[in-house]
Image (tube, rainbow, N blue to C red; front, side):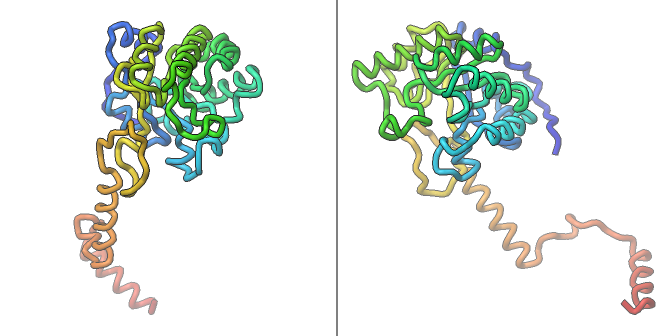
Length: 294
């Protein structure tokens, strides 16, 4: 399977995203974790594709995002980048790859961009991560910030809880967003923040906000592709903010069950799925087999 596509869109760049923001046209972003998921996201016209550390759970079967390591993220970024011809691609810096010092973060960011072939990186954290963001952006690598609910820090936050529900909490979200903007982020993800708070934060920033569970007042939206496409069995927990747009699990299950049944009944493969042999060649083959006594 090659990476060719009929997609004729121009490549999305930082300037494209800034123009969308200036025109107040919502920015679309979705996650992808491999070649097929990136291929369909790019063909669907996504402005941005995020190789999120959520792949730890949706692609690698891990318990949470803290388990995935940098080498795994680089591998998945490379797979996604091979399929993405138009969308602006971002690779997540996983937990443990950037918190120790700005220099460590820069080394990790360089690997994700150089080896992963993406256009920028995302990291979690607000004011405390400003020096790290500054160090990466000074090296010429675009950084997407992430404030509000930061899943890598779920243990410190008491779990996956909505952030900014109090006055003090809302001020903290705004302070963090302003800090990552000042540090050089080209945009910032606002996760699990009350819609009213996210809308006000968006108005106070000069850079785009990408919401996930933050209402429609943000500059754009992002969802995990596996969640929104329904690529999971019935009964799986979904966050409140997820809208399921498809039933990939159901369609795949139906197709695989049909394949199983046709193989069992020998109705597949049929003549249309096989390669014919000229009758005279087959007769000669059978004759030779009989002669050899096989």
